[in-house]
Image (cartoon, rainbow, N blue to C red):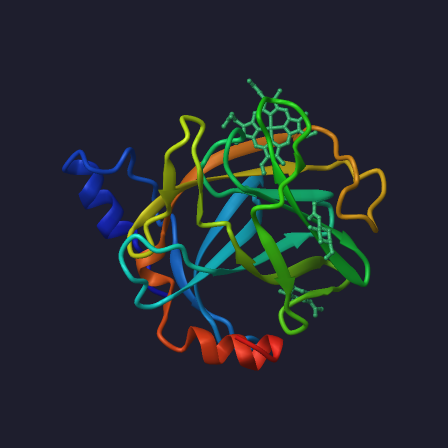
Length: 220
Ligand code: HEM
Ligand SMILES: *[C@@H]1O[C@H](CO)[C@@H](O)[C@H](O)[C@H]1NC(C)=O
Ligand SMILES: *[C@@H]1O[C@H](CO)[C@@H](O)[C@H](O)[C@H]1NC(C)=O
């Protein structure tokens, strides 16, 4: 485990980063999929967290869109868990997921206001078999996303998340099950908790990204 605490706190002291969040992200090597992730434990209630892990290719050419691998681990009481790639509910790709035991459903969403988000066609997802499972305590999924790390902002400019630095992300948690859990377009009800953090992508790089993709998906 390598914590990015020092780097982010140094940046905060220098006024570069918005805050100094203790041990925000740490490096995590997943034996099941072989990817190295940068991970954050998002606390949704005292002592209980949803883990968000992100793996990126390395190197990523400057100003290029890039795919990402997302792995999420949630206690079974988490009825849906969302990730906002641009760090806010509105005008950025939202990855929403829930358990539909023995499967996990991932839904691509986007919101233009603080109301139920709609389907978002500019991001596409491919679930891994390795790294996706439900057991008696947790549900977990691992997915490739194309279109999560770049998007058009509310003002119309193109934004690409920094593949080698910190990005402000947000999560949302709900304890209420989606109305139709087998469908990725199910309606969902509002979150009980949301929050923000700074996710260090500089410790999420995988030089063997495409060969690991082949290992897990059968293609790059
Ligand atoms: C039915 C679904 C949803 C409804 C009705 C809803 C509604 C709302 C409302 C009313 C607020 C403002 C709360 C306040 O001002 O205190 C809010 C804020 C927020 N929501 Fe949602 N939301 C939904 C789904 C989601 C999802 C799927 C995500 C992320 C994946 C998300 C992330 C956030 C975040 C980060 C905020 C804080 C303000 C912001 O960043 O814009 N929401 N939501
Ligand atoms: C739901 O899944 C289908 C088939 O994989 C996909 O084409 C569609 O984009 C998904 N919709 C959402 C909202 O994720
Ligand atoms: C259930 O899954 C979670 C998350 O994937 C894992 O940490 C835990 O060890 C698993 N528990 C059992 C009993 O296999």
